[in-house]
Length: 198
Image 1 (cartoon, rainbow, N blue to C red):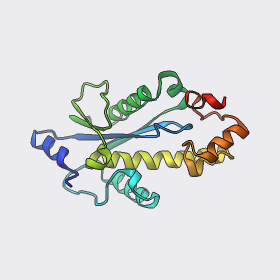
Image 2 (cartoon, one colour):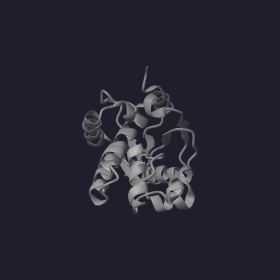
Image 3 (cartoon, rainbow, N blue to C red):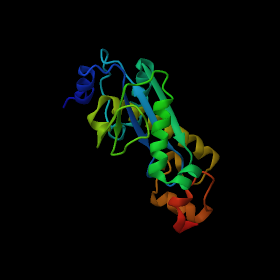
């Protein structure tokens, strides 16, 4: 499968700076949603870039470092649980992606996003369902977003012990739900996701 299919079409059309954007953390009960946007060179392709969920933590971390070193530009943004509760997770994800794209040091002339959403930006865009496994750029964005968020949740595990954030990364595992019932919610829990335990 050609992971550069979409990118090649766009560069053939004269687009110089194509950006891939992806999010991680739409589903968890705790922690922010994190989005990354990345513009990569196509003359030095990094082997092994794929949907971050298909890669081991070790491989993701190694690839994330290489992606950041080789990127023409990259940006990582987050939207906190309080904002997610205010505007809902879909709007928070769109805002987070838009912020990441607009934070790039080089303005892209086209954006490829994962999923099925339209962002409020004047930059031409295309949304690709399962894009993190189909597009090199979206896959690269998914890797750096996932590594950033996992490290963030490891830090929260130290601040809020007992919830197992170092293992569940905020997702609603049985152990995490039991901890909520036992300790109540902490400040990084999404109130709109945890109504039944409040």
